Length: 367
Image (cartoon, rainbow, N blue to C red; front, top):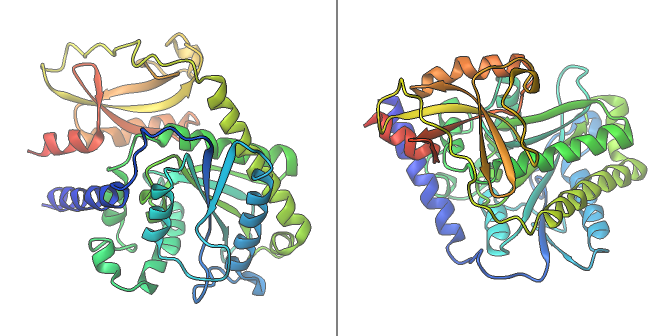
């Protein structure tokens, strides 16, 4: 019964996302690479207030500086969800990006915690791996309660419910690889250029990321509650350094796409169906990596993991671990790959050797 409720909610969220996107046409050619920058919170929603600092103000200053740096590139167009201290509904932020036919959506935030936690982390939309990730997402998602008609706008979505958060993750898979790529570049810039503590690329159910239909990330630039880090985030120097790292990561991401623009192969490799699984059956695998290089699917290339398969889509080779006959079985597979260090892995589904949408697979397997 719970599975059917989740799938019903998924269907509503898919419709909600499509309706906000219906006025755009991603097939239209664009002269510029469009980046939508989103400063978290705003207006009556101050965000985190660690050590007396206001997240909404710091996030806005960082976003405006990121935009200023990106706008130096004549091939980039920057759009802001807000440029002043106002509150913007989460679903409206997504609509702004969708209507702009954006290539990237980057949401900037500051963290807080009751402990001495510090460092940077960048999130993509995905299954919250642990309670900490869920709590971060819950805190950011809870701002929908400040919106008028939030129950109507989000179809009964409840930020406090793990099942409700899980349901939004199943309706958007297309851009996960690119989102992880951008998130990794941002974290790399923070670590290599600024020597910030790297808390990694993580997955969680942020509703603001779900509303978009392009590669999207949410950057937690640090913890206001950690005294030294809060002071750094509130300083002009800190904000300029953070902004430069984010802007440079976006430029590197764009350059990597430009360098691969001539490769239009759809699918070179097809994963052979497992002979032990009946025809037309659906299997689940864990995607652990994506690369422009074709690696042999040998254990020495994947930290000792066996049963690795490979698929080429567009200009990327994607690598998958294991075979599971049900979605429930993937939990053990995910545990195994996380123990090997593949913390950004996620579940994908196949039918007769061809990848299908996870939502489609779950609907089929529950019928």
